Every structure is written in C-alpha cells, then in structure tokens.
Length: 165
Image (cartoon, rainbow, N blue to C red):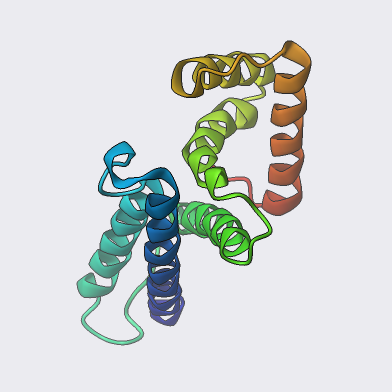
C-alpha cells in the first residue's frame, strides 16, 4: 500500500510542475494584476500532497502502511480530481483548450457535488449564478443544462463504479 501512496506522490509532483507552467501561461494571458497568487488547483494539490506525505510518515516500515476504507476513498477522490486537472492543463499546454478553461476547474468541482447527489437542477442554478456573478455572462437555461449534462456524462464515464466524490 505504501508503494501506491508514494507513486501517487510522485505523480502529484509532476502535476504540480504542470500547474506551475500553465499558471504562468494564465498570468501572462490575463495580466498579473487580475490574478491571485495561487490557483485553486495548486492549493488543492498542496493539500493532497500534505495528506499523502502524512500517511507515509505514520508508517515506520515499508510494508506497514495500511489504508482504511475512508482513506482509500479519499485517495480515489484525489486521483479522480487530479486526472481532471491533468487533462485540462495538458490540453491547455498543447493548445487544444483556451487558457480560460482553467477558470472552470473549481466551478466543475462545485457542480459535481450537486450532480453526485442527483441534484442536476441545483447544479444548473449554481452554474447560471456563478457565470453571472463571476464572469458577468448570462447563460440560458438550455446552455446551462447542456453544460451540466456534459459534465455529468464525463463524470459518469470517468468515475464508473468508483464514485466516491
């Protein structure tokens, strides 16, 4: 089990480098005065790293680390979220997505809370509210439903049987 956790830490460190690179691209595009010093993804990533490092430090011997059910669920949630970060940021780096796509990663996670609780209507309302307040964009009900449905479909496909978020 310790190997799984230490491998996860190594992958998170690679993701951290990707976050630094894409955050720098974002700052250059938006202008420094419009940005906060740390992206939501980077903050979340630091929390994940701290938690995993804490788990490994509790084990005195290589094979001693045993994760309980809740820790395994937490690890699965981390993996799912980090896969989302990786895909989005790699697509930005490759030019397949606009840099502004980084604005939506936190929004998507907020909407997934509603989606996993079968509250799509609340997810649609939250999407419209955030788009109006944060971006000053009025989304129609149809546009909002399409966005939430696409997010729900992606989550269903990726999470499969391991829906822990």
